[in-house]
Image (tube, rainbow, N blue to C red):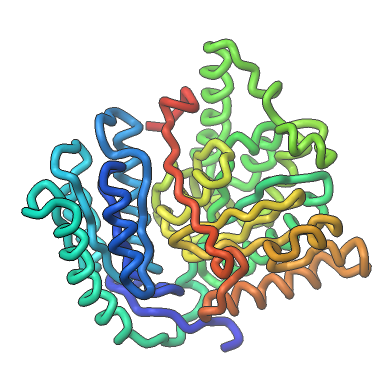
Length: 393
């Protein structure tokens, strides 16, 4: 297909590029139970996390929304939720919200089953086998890219990223938007110093004002606890990679979002309210960021990395693109697209964008990228009160 891919039909007009069954723990206490169930099921994943008990306020809201979002991602066929039975983030609460996606959902609590964890694992395997058999009956069908949600990420940035890999990603992001799809740029703290450029691209005055006020409020609140954020960024790794200021880092970050108009600004793990390019509030932490993107419905994430990073995501494949010749050589097993040819072979950014576009199409059609092959599938949920004194909510 010239402008499409082969995906899996989902309810409510959605399409998946993967067809997995998720075993989801509602609370940290049953992570091992969920993992052992998943280990016995073909084409399943265990979504586990260190949270789910004793949370309140924004952290509780973020945890629920993120877990529900991950389970509702179109790459997931169905979900088995494992609870303990005494936590405040219950399996039933998650199930009721995930059911809105019209996916197959089942749930139970370990404390409600005679026989404890051994019996619970047996029960989960039985439910999971039925669900995976149903998933295997679904065949890929042709869809166009208006159905795709693309996540944009960078990690281990260096001075080369902003002139090689990042602008190539920007071209691909613009193409997705032009074809009627959706693209999401997170890494909120890495917009600092470039907010005036983002505001010019806002779809309307209200969106522009939200971009400015979000960053102003963040910097004001963090100063109140005695922290100058400009003294934290760039990170030590960024500095070693040649970045000198937060503004320089931010210019590279926003380049990944191309030139498309900005439709709005989302809270962490919130789903876009329409097509086009969206911004997401997120603190610039790679694993938390990609978890938020997957929870927001991103089918696939493109991650640029200058110094190299192996991380991936359980739900959404993470395509790695690197513009640093040394990193592409030293960490070749982690890199999917070599953008360093812009430097070593005088390739144009547009040439690398064409290569990246083909890699994206192949990934959507089922080809595994390096993070999937190597088994990197990290999940982490942003704890807003524990790390950053700021939220839109």
